[in-house]
Amino acid sequence: MIIRLFSIFLISVFVLSCGGKKESGSSKLSEAEESELLTKASSIFGALPKKMPGSENDTPELIELGKKLYFETKLSVNNTMSCNTCHDINNMAGVDGKPTSPGALPGKIGTRNTPTVFNAGFQFAQFWDGRAPDLKEQAKGPILNPVEMAMPNEKEVVKVISSIPEYQDLFKKAFPNEKNPITFDNIAHSIAAFERTLVSKSRYDQWVTGDKNALTDEEKIGLKTFIEVGCITCHTGPLFGGNLYQKMGLVKPYSNTKDLGRFDVTKQESDKFMFKVSMLRNVALTAPYFHDGAVKTLEEAVKIMADINLGKQLTDDQLKSIVAFLKALTDPKLEKKTALK
Image 1 (spheres, rainbow, N blue to C red):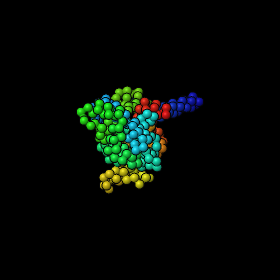
Image 2 (image 1 turned 180 degrees about the horizontal axis):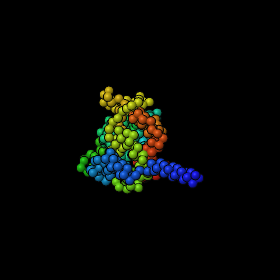
Image 3 (image 1 turned 135 degrees about the vertical axis):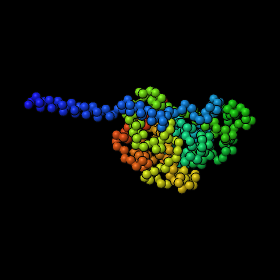
Image 4 (image 1 turned 90 degrees about the vertical axis):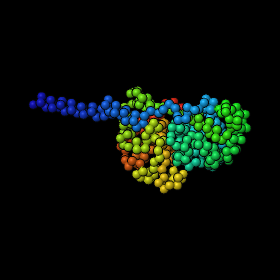
């Protein structure tokens, strides 16, 4: 009898231990599951191309000029602000870390969060409301915007840049076939050329192109969860976004109902609260979040988006794994740079 009871006890322990192993095994994808995930990821997202559209026509001279102009504070009305002031690529991931950015003139504050300039040229349109079709048109906007760099007009911008001897030489080299190369259009064109060099990479790219060990088990599960809960309703393509407009608050209204989004551009009722979907590359380094910069943490941003755009309440495990994966979209070089600031 004692032997029989002891045998039952051993069998129970064995069953329980097997159950425990099975449970812990759920934190790791099987080889078949990972293979299926890789196939899906390759199809839905793919890897980020090495070069941005249009960069094949950018010469070293054009890029050099654009880089100098990107850091040029004389493009602002009082010589205090450059492109890099809000899109900091030296110490941050192409942002300034503020909910909305202050302008060159005292008391002027923008109404929308500054998006990252890294990978921006891969997007189908620029600005939250898509009012600029490409980087060149986007570069023109802040320079003349009275709330941002506040230059009075294009003519004044050209006058200021033309007065600097160094630029005379740089523009001639960048635009050798033009008699008077210092124009507002060429200024924006040069800045765009430099911005097209700002391509980032991540461990996700290594994984999706063949390195099975580039992502951790938690990150792979996070990617699987990202797909399964429906984040891919909006966040698809190599940028994980940046390729369509979507309503902010598709299922439930977003708390900020003052900003009408793309409606301000088109005046079409259907475009109310429509915004360009954020790209998620380096998203862990670009807080605060959303068009109004109202959300401080990535965890909260993911939680809110699942609620108001998917109508889902994420479990703690789902939230944790998705955030873990999103961090794998970070460029290691940018991560080191921001850690040192």
